[in-house]
Length: 147
Image (cartoon, rainbow, N blue to C red; front, top):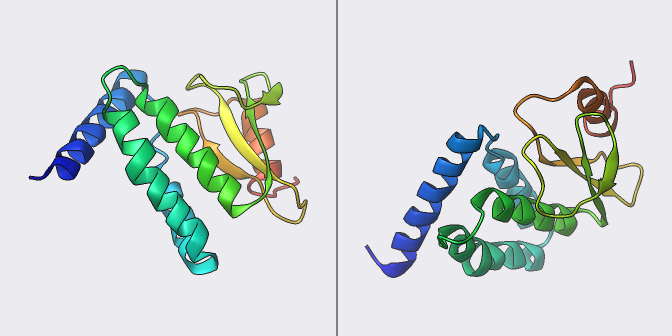
């Protein structure tokens, strides 16, 4: 294997271990769907996203001193900001929202709220179990359920 493949393998291993240790939810599936949207909508933003992945995310996650969960969450926030201009918030289990500010606990719901109210919020990070307040917030802002 070459150096880049080795680095990716190490990053994957460290992320999988962190997910297991903390019981965190793996966000990569919805991040992949966002990448597909970026590829279709904006080649420049897709290039920025893949550049960030290769040059920033993978080395940071592979770094023994880094926090793989926090690095992936920041990548998700970056992708969301490329998809929609807006603000990223974290919502604690009581429903209290505050500006996204790493490090973010695995019990936090992290949402990117687009500037346009016509667009649903993007779930950047989900706890393994949403509290009732987080579920209500998710349903209203992401799923657009009102009842």
